[in-house]
Length: 471
Image (cartoon, rainbow, N blue to C red):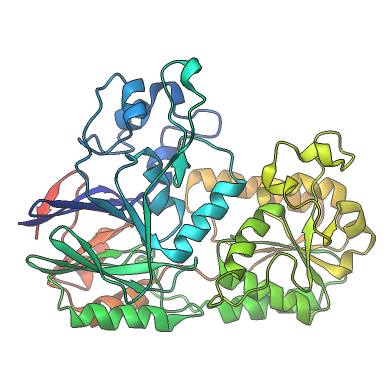
């Protein structure tokens, strides 16, 4: 018997956690954080208690309460006995937090399979993030009950990487990863060969990005497998068609930059290598220097090591690193002692400060995320432009942050522009992908509108959380 249980990504975007069982083999497809479900109960200053292990997450149904999955130390803090792992593996589609972050809670003996680039991105995230219970994907320090036992070394998880063309054998399953195009490099869909036939999982994907051929490759392979079932993302099934592409982002942003006589600020997700390339090319063509943060450098240096991505490193031509004002505000090296990812790069020759940018603003295009907008106080932009190259807010919490961001922009008299291309296919693209693959059954996940699929397909199974579905 082959069955699926959906523990996340049900009636919400993200939080994907899909258990696939075939005979005695059990694997999870992704194990991510559900931003929507988490946001119903928690926020910045009201967070799950680490003192309760994974208890708060279990109690609020943010992770499934099932046997043989979680770390011994986190169970002990919740007053539960250790459990023998019963999951054979977790297969990660890509490195976004809503697909990968809750691997942090899993028992260290459960192997994690992911693409080589995904592993590299997770390393970059780990380097520049403050350690916390929800972002211990690659390794973790066990949390014993008593402080005297805290000095034990970190536990490294078992990671096994793959590329397109590999075949992964896990128990009764053979898994075929095939690259797809998404807003983060190294994203994959999977063809899972079970005892009853092929099951396809799309992960997150699109056809309108810079590399549609990747998704077309996946569609062809998936179609050849004659799948009995397909698990598809449906983030933007409620949007009929969106003509935005990376080229339209380039065209829009280039026009803004070329028409500016002051500082240009861009805000985009630095995991998105296509978006970096867009703004890097615009900066070069407009005789500006692209200024990135030290956190960005952690990603860029790893991307540069992958020749297929074809990007410069953080010390490349026309790139500078922005040194933020911390601690004493004197830019003394000691001010960065608590930020190892900055400390390790203080000897780079291409570092500059807000004062240097301020003196010649039309020379620079700076990548500045909203969470670092307090640097505008030092930058003092004149005739400035702000290019928001991210999705518009789609929930109440994001809407509040967006309004706060607009307050900063208005205060510093920046001109606001939107230039974005989504990492997810709209309805037109999703329908094309599904029709081409032609699965026996269709299971929509990662969507708030699964019912829309029924308007176009007669084989749709509307999934319910924590309910097992036999294929």
